[in-house]
Length: 227
Picture (cartoon, rainbow, N blue to C red):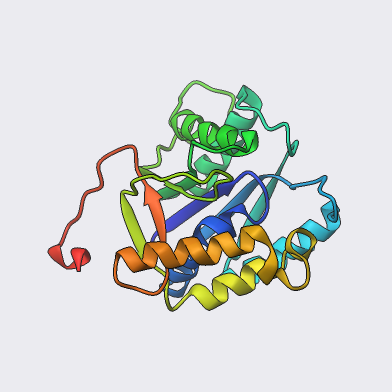
């Protein structure tokens, strides 16, 4: 059983970028924890209490037992020492095998900052002679999911088949009614999710898939994973 940590700048980003993969992980009995660096508010139709209820409902769909919301400002998230250390303390407590972070190229400054914060917190996690809580720990692997506001082309390091999980991924996103409305099918971001996941699925011969990027080389232990 793997111990996995997925970090998002706001509630719903992890669902949008890798909700199908998380369903795959939890269905295989891997432990997955989500950390939202902000509560996502203010937004036009949301409130902190509403977003909290939405994220709890979505987490249940994904099979998440623990979801942590840090108290940093939406829209003004910065890659600063305080947030690096707080996330590093979460890493030292949870000690994940794999860390998933937002892709570092994005139009939304919070997404860019969140990616940098994850990189720094991964490094900070191993520090000794520090006032941070927990014992030193370094995450072996960090991979980046796509929940981007940019229409860009990129080359993923690997693509995860989520054809069986796509319906439940959509259900997890539906719970964010304050962001997408009670019938989200016409929302631009909702359409992006369907079209994007269908595109990546088509490239690997499946119906739906999610792409991931690694700055380091991705190793394999058996040829069967390439099928």
